[in-house]
Length: 374
Image 1: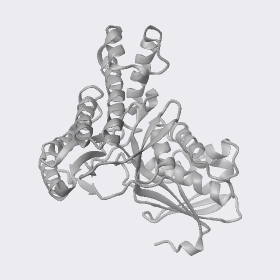
Image 2: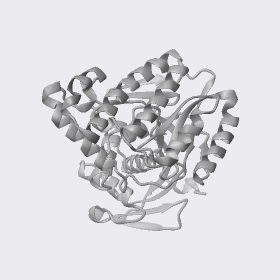
Image 3: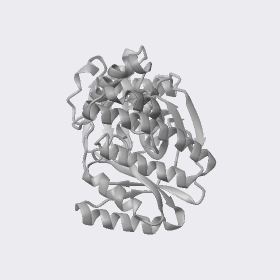
């Protein structure tokens, strides 16, 4: 346990679950995430040196970062995300001062719930707080995204960092990833609950096909940009896609079809949430998973087994993978009275199918960045 009285600030940022809208953020589309109560919390105090001393509640390691050499820590096993976040914050013209920083992460690593974004966002917010700077959540999110792309090597969109920084308790975010326009939508699920289940198959977006998928969507955009008159791939409606589908071939065609149809599902999901239409929301989740499995090919046998077990349960209105894929979690809309049986049944069926034991998470929809002076 951390004795917070020894520190000056407690700063946290959220993990996130994306309810729907997968692999469309970097195509300029709208997504529908919510910030979670699972978070990365940073205890921080100035130390009067030119060093950032990092430690963790969950690791025995300690790491010392020289503020003048922040670009040299990319190969660190632990601390590279913090180094990259500090470097990109510094490069943006902000003051980075020497400090002691203890990090406590309750977002499961490799879960697809954006532990990396929570770490980046909370680290930058902590550096700002300890240097006496105002924390602007949108600026922090954009800087954290650059850290993930330029330092960690994941060519990600803005969704994860934005949700981590700008989340609002009890609300999902209908976020336009092209303009950063965000509409907060109250989560109205009536007699249903969101249930998150982790397939517990280790994965890493850097080592996965994430960047390859992004390149394929960029290829589709270049082919369709002039004929379809679009400024980003997510502007393709399903109808427009069908008009120009003959210009695309093979996997590139499949990836573009997923983007066009997933963006339409996001639009419908926001309408369903506002109306409290959980049946419609559930059906859209099922359609999204099928598209991510068959067209975008980012699920894998573990996530498919988990979603299949969920969709077959009588209390489940819909289920899909959430996050980048290749491992991680599913999100399901489940009748609250059946949640306990749903969890037991799904975990049992999943372990029989894969040999892995799944984990179920109890969490609330929470705020993004929090800063508290001790």
